[in-house]
Image (cartoon, rainbow, N blue to C red; front, top):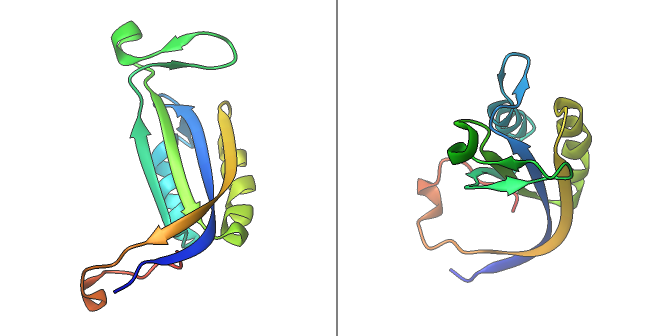
Length: 120
């Protein structure tokens, strides 16, 4: 099957693994919200070290907690536009970066074996 290309938007949410939302880890709550809103995909990446506008270093080896996290979300511009204000309301601190991209979807597996089909 040939690769398909289409315009998408990428939402990158920069936060800390100690951040909470209604008593649970913020990154888990955001991924759950993405699934609830039927967003095409979200991945949580743990950083080794980082800093933000305060200049304070974050990293497990420095304090024993506070690893930087980045949640990468990819979907259509319309879905990202709907999601952005929702996740912003869930965050107390952090950075949200939004950018346009071209997605190249490669499917070599039998599509009937995939659990769900995403729009991207």
